[in-house]
Length: 124
Image (cartoon, rainbow, N blue to C red; front, side, top):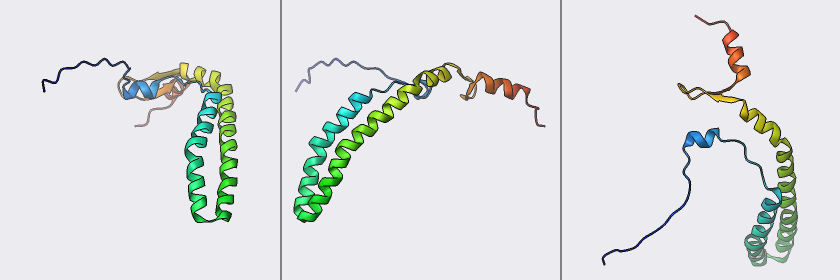
């Protein structure tokens, strides 16, 4: 009844601006593909079996084919997408390194955009 206790927490907090302006992150395509494969195997497989078995054998066969294609196809697609993204990562990081933020209005721009805007005629 006295409510005695203690807790220790660890973590980081990011502001919305910090999240918006953060550098691009590298993907881990193998880990992502394995997680999706295992998730589908342990969560989607029982659902497909229960739904298919409760309706009819034909539906169970169709669900089984769709599930098999998704079980292997989705992790492969995620792996290929992650490898493609990681191949573009150096360019994305270089582009991010060239960005600036206006502290007055919060606009994000590159040096080239700033030079182009400086040379543009002012509308009255």
